[in-house]
Image (tube, rainbow, N blue to C red; front, side, top):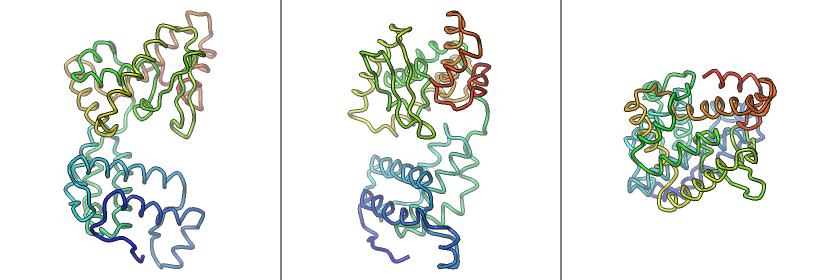
Length: 296
């Protein structure tokens, strides 16, 4: 691939350059590229993979800048390794593997084959540091876990997860509609938009509205990626102090399902009807997943 980027380019430019190059493969068959080049395609061939890989690359660039690294030639392999291993505290092995693949593709594209090669060499070791896949378990006392968090911004995030059932990546996307007393989360997993009606829970809605305002204020001076990483470290320690089992922040999502099921059953809904409502609220496409969560 002929490079149109200098080694001392800024990381923001490198990100834009990589996006411009990699998206050229969308709509083109991998096999066609293979025949043309006689080897593995250097491009990305689907929108979903492109968006995910570039999102990871952007996260790394933001992280690197926070470490004082602003240029492509100043990036060392140790920076990349530290970034990936910092995510091992909360990422599954599968997710960490995707992160490593994304950064390997990014550095190949911007002419830092030396870093891409090192990622390849350490590939298995890196992703093996991730969490083994397992079922998230609800906290017995989620409010106590939240109270044991050291940072106020982390308490806000945890309480929002508990009150909305939001995935950690969706917390910053939460919007409130005061007139309708609804919470909207756009572009959640699978591109779905979640809509949760709180007209039957006005006190919880008011609290969510308050928390969303607080989170926005906190994020004015910090990047979401750094806040998210520190949140996981703080949460793990809080869970340890509480004596509960740590299965990640997804536990708050399970707590939401269990509490919501109890509320709906008390209002006279059958279990099937209640699970159908929860299925819509948490953004799952199958009622079986809501039932699975309710047993967590």
